[in-house]
Structure formats: structure tokens, C-alpha cells
Image 1: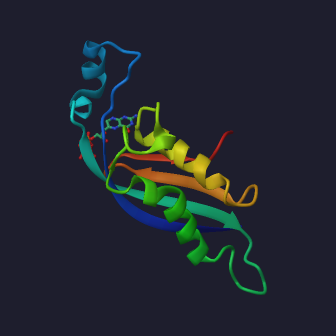
Image 2: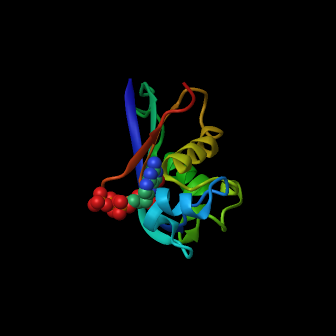
Image 3: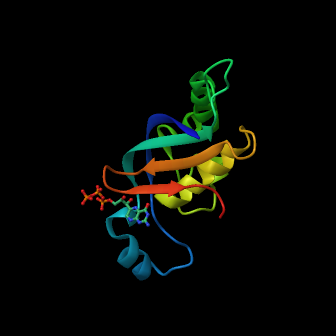
Length: 136
Ligand SMILES: Nc1nc2c(c(=O)[nH]1)N=C([C@H](O)[C@H](O)COP(=O)(O)OP(=O)(O)OP(=O)(O)O)CN2
């Protein structure tokens, strides 16, 4: 099995806040990430597909197609956006790294044959990373 990864970067802002919690609880849990006007990250997104190279092309998937799918399904929607307000398909979620990784997977999965999408890895900061491989 070969794993093929497309890495992209995008910048976005968000606020971590739960309507299920009191103000006091929100600030206790999310601290500086609960800042009312949000804060920004330079995200790094890695999307990995798996498969055997086609003997005729030497490719698991054309990286040009992988780039197009990642841009069309995710990056074009989230780059330079406020993730709490600007992206219709993120409405109603708390835009933590793990929730974003799940939502990105859900959008991307439609564009690949069953089983080809292997992993969505989202680096929120240099040190904070969420990885999603679909439902167990
Ligand atoms: N489970 C989660 N917890 C937190 C998330 C998240 O997405 N999921 N996000 C945040 C903040 O948005 C942010 O990532 C935390 O920033 P910070 O602590 O400053 O992290 P840094 O990597 O920049 O700082 P270092 O101290 O250099 O590691 C909080 N929690």
C-alpha cells in the first residue's frame, strides 16, 4: 500500500465557545481561545490517500487531481474566513482542530472512491494537531 499526501496551508480565524456552557465555563475551558472577537491561525492541512500505483501510470492518484479536490472542497471555502460565521457547512460546530478535521473529511470523502481517502491531518499550530481517519 502506498500513501500519497497533499499538504496545503490556509489562514483563518475562529472563536472557541459552546452554547451548552455558561460564560464562566467557556472562559475556564477555552481561556484565550474564547476571546469575543476570535483569533487567527495559519493552519496546515495534510490530506492522504492510499492505494496501489496503477501499473500503466505509476500513480495511486494524480496529485494534480488531489490538489484540485482539496482546494475545491476545503481550502477555497476556509482560507481568510472566520470559521464561526463564514462557512455554511461549518455552521453549528465548535471549530476546534478535531471538529474541523472531521468536517473536512466529510466533504473530501465524496470525491474519492470508497476506501481511498486515508487520513485528514490538521495542524492548528506547530504543536497542536488533529488527525481523523473516518469512523472506526
Ligand atoms: N481539543 C482542543 N483543544 C484546544 C484547541 C483545539 O482545537 N482542540 N484549540 C486551542 C487553541 O485554538 C490553540 O490551538 C491553542 O493555542 P496555544 O496553546 O497557544 O498553542 P501553541 O501551539 O500556539 O502554543 P505552544 O505553547 O507553543 O504549544 C486550545 N485548545
